Amino acid sequence: MHHIFKQGVKQKPVLLLLHGTGGDENSLLALAEMIDPEASVLSVRGNVLEHGMPRFFRRIAEGVFDMEDLAARTEELYEFLTTAATKYGFDHNQIIAIGYSNGANIAANLLYEYSDALKGAILHHPMVPNRHATVPEQQTNVFIAAGVNDPMCPQQEATDLQTMLVQAGADVTLEWETNGHQLTMSEVQKAKAWYEQLFV
Ligand code: MLT
Image 1 (cartoon, rainbow, N blue to C red):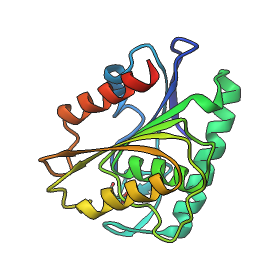
Image 2: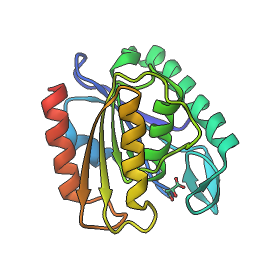
Image 3: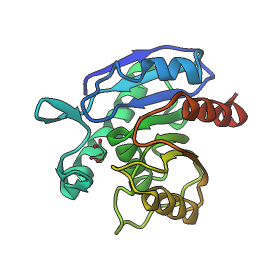
Image 4: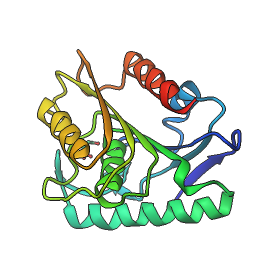
């Protein structure tokens, strides 16, 4: 997968950046810098193109996922993380995903498919990736930022995602913004405070 790797302080987590539809591996670099300037960064570009816009998996319509492609792309990303850990010499168990929108959805699906993919996740405006999944045991810490007026992700998406992850054992913090689908500075600051409490 196309990606950027930036070596940080060895003992720090590795921030896995997953952009939204139409973004790329450069889109969230500034975000990682705000969350933890000393952490290593692995920023990945989605392998799917929708009218020329990179995404992490196909969708049939807005909010309607191609479940077969989601499963295959999630496996591809999981395998890429294993390969990258070997190549760059970082600990596979130290990965904290930061995803926005489509990137948050594939990060959520990594949690729905694997108990050992992520140490933690910051999910900006995610949806439930798969309502039929049985989420494997999770010992992860998850931060969700959602917008009360998000036309792409109704409030139920964030609350159901929280419920399903908590039932699997994850520790989930859900923060609401009085905004829509956009990624705001206020939610990034809340994510940073959450991150610093747990990982610094
Ligand atoms: C998705 O397809 O993952 C969601 O609708 C969010 C997005 O459009 O990126």
